[in-house]
Amino acid sequence: MKIILITLTLLFSKSICSSELPINLSGTIEISVKNGTIDANFTLKNMPKLRDYLILLNSGFNIQYFRNHKNTSNYVFKKTYNTNYSEESFGYYLPDKTGKGKILPSIMQFKYTGKFPVINNMSNASETGDWKGNIAFNGETIRTDSFQTAWYPILYDIEKDKRHDAITYNIEVTCLDCKSIYVNGSKPVSATHAIFKKEKPVSISLFAGDYDIAVKNGSYYLNSGLSETQMSLLGEITSSYEQYYQEKLSIAYGENVVFIHTAPVSKKDSWLFVSYPSIVTINHDQGGLSKLLNDSESRWFKPYLAHELAHYYFLTYRTFNSELGDMLQESFSEYLSLKVTKQFINNETYLNNINKKLIQLRDKKLTAIKEIKNNSDYGNRNLYVYTYAPIIWLAIEKEIGEDHMWQWLNKLLTVKTKRTDYQFMITTLASVIEEDKLDFIINTYLSNNNSIKNARAVLQ
Image 1 (cartoon, rainbow, N blue to C red):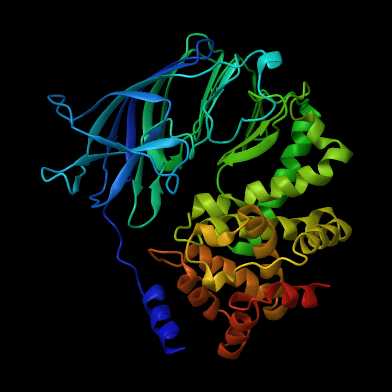
Image 2: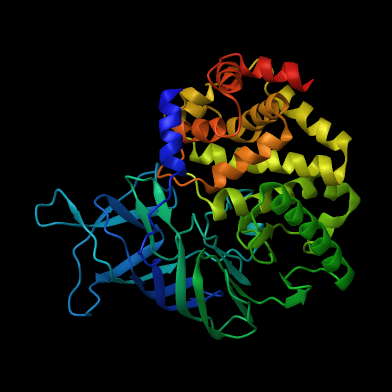
């Protein structure tokens, strides 16, 4: 326990304030939703000094140049592809004179173009194959997320396993065959041309095309298909979940949510994702989001909405890195969704969801959380992060009590650290419970190959 106590002292000591300015994106982008084209001329400013990095750009882009800020010469660049960093993007870097190292100027220009398939006829579309990281043109809109698609240059720090996707921006967007344009973090506009600015860092998604904009109680609804009454109902549900999270976590929730509906570029894919503050629903329902409020659909939609809203904390408020980063972000969002289900939906649905997870884990042998050294150790990633880990968190809650559990989550979200790894997880837990209880939790749930059996025993 001495190591943990020493680390605690370091973690909770007064941090030195960084004088670094946030990375800023400026420039222009021209889009055609009918032709599936993107032409971008961007500049990144305030890039930190990094030894080992990549600049991620979607693999569908052709690079015209990476250019110096004086606009006098182009940089020589190298291109690589590594699915450990991104499946949708190429990684670019500037080699130094030796060819063995890398250089990174604080300011750099990027000019690139891309032409993407426009899937506006479902008779010729694939059954499946659309996904969050797809730059999707469906003939009426362009849809990007703010993380995977890398439609703007994203600096990735390899040493710290950190994507600098949350940035400030001042960009000019032109789309002559669009009716409306929305850039994440700014108000949507009904126009073919607009300038969007954001002085607080945010991950930037883009949604433009032929759609209507509605506003209700401060929230925006883009192509939603909802009536005034339905917008009010969805707003009430969303607000109650947000209020619950901020009260329990003692951290204020962020901006009002923007609800977006659009059609996929495949026949059968249907899902939701969050690029905070946007919640994007992708399906072929003619009623837009209205079906999700039906009693039959709301049984799964409300817990799903709770999960996505929880990602404000476990993805936007704080991003998690290291081999446990993906698991921490997804599993604690799922844990919070379960808490909302119990609080706002009903106890029967809550218990049913837990039992479904326990059934999925029956006869499964999964790597203990302490033994995760890389992403491959998860085995079945979805089973691990959405099913196994949330069950472990619920079992730990039973052992330490709800109050201590909420305190731990607050520490996970607020304590300063460079790596959100296993040691960080244990150190924050040690700050809210006694030493003997911590040892019990580690030995029973975090390092034990029989953790599923142990969790089942306290949850059933």
